[in-house]
Length: 145
Image 1: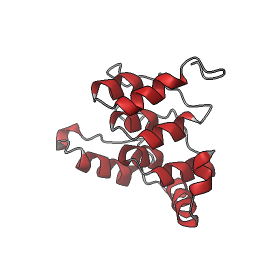
Image 2: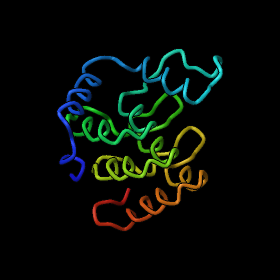
Image 3: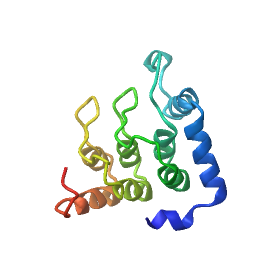
Image 4: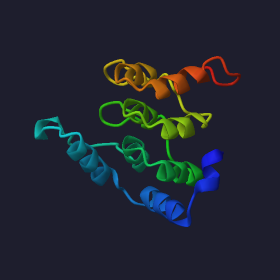
């Protein structure tokens, strides 16, 4: 994995801490604050992991470290049905999208609660680079989903 070479000891340590502790409420609060969501839009409970948070903000090293450490469900949905890949695609984080797509178990076609896939979301938000990355994955041996 390309990102593996770039990991610092701090990135690995942070990833282990994110997996060891329940940071879901903190991660959710960061997302909702950044997204300026109204109080009544906020969930009462959440499954917004450290991987969701790092993918949302496009923090390449933390995403890579979380994948290296293991234990993250790449297709886990947040309370609105967003996977880490869909968040990275939505916000145009090309390097995070590439890293996530390197993982065999990731489902690039998983739709959110509105029926948007990472590809459709990237396209509708004008992230041409992410669209090309996602389209480039199609037709590759062992990559069809």
